[in-house]
Length: 188
Image (tube, rainbow, N blue to C red; front, side, top):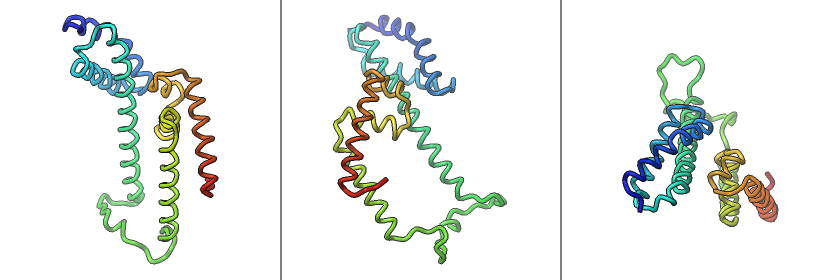
């Protein structure tokens, strides 16, 4: 079990490298500092009682997870704010009312038919079902690379494997999904 001093010494020894790694990933000093601080707090709170030799691997995993969480939050935030900005027109005088924007038009110049919306939703459900059928490591690699848009190195670091393994998992996942979706008659 790590003593308080051993934990403190460990955190001091990794803080600069963790900060540089985080800056490399997120390209923002304030966010990198937040990620490192969150990682250190989680290590101290949840794993401070572990033996000192286990701390480096635990910390690296926590740091990777905190970085992934930051990317997820950024993606969600960008999606929300970019979607709301789609509602505003260039000539707005600052008096924006989303309810006025959401009124349906009678013509079909931007509306989707109920049939195509239902078909699209059904296709998404089928794709999600096939993704869930993938083996765990293939699914993890596929989602990190293509859903979370992480590069191969970031995915390898998060998964704790080599970049070659990530490429292999992704390749196999794509092949399996293509075969399964083709069998269902889905053309993308």
